Length: 206
Image (cartoon, rainbow, N blue to C red; front, top):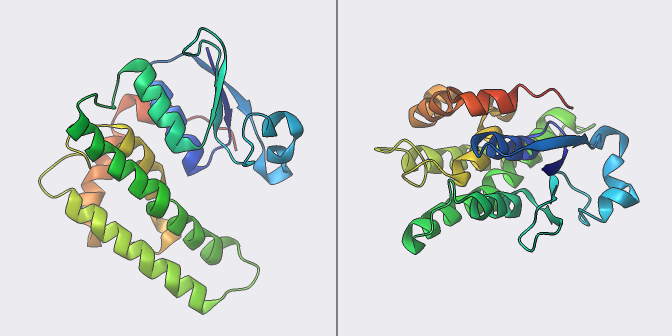
């Protein structure tokens, strides 16, 4: 059994997608980030960066519970645990990891800033909006080019795709017209047709 500390954000969706795809048994513990649950001492012992998601695997690698925070680290851990969607061949693994890190270092943070300044900031700051919308468009262009001639970012379906999709699903928040990125549009449609992803995205927490 895996305990998932979760709220319904793109980073949270990454882990429900992985758990469903890997057919792992899990239970959700809601962390309401709108009410600052992420700063509660019990949660900080699991996730010291006060961010969701985090997990506790009750059957860790030494037969004891292990906690993991940061969505990318969780995806890698679950991939190693199950041997699914995270190749053991070094060349193939590097391909997956570089696109996972692309998401963690760029496609997530930059799109998150886009969301903040476009939708949530009390003051509309044109410079900030332009900066993050333009960077968002650049990143979508990178993704669009990577998908030419292949169905998934690293060749085979992997944890990198599980990380990228939830952020791409917020394209309307980001000032993105999917028609400008046809390979990304097809990619989103291809992934959201998967039953495990549909189940993960249907979870109503947050």
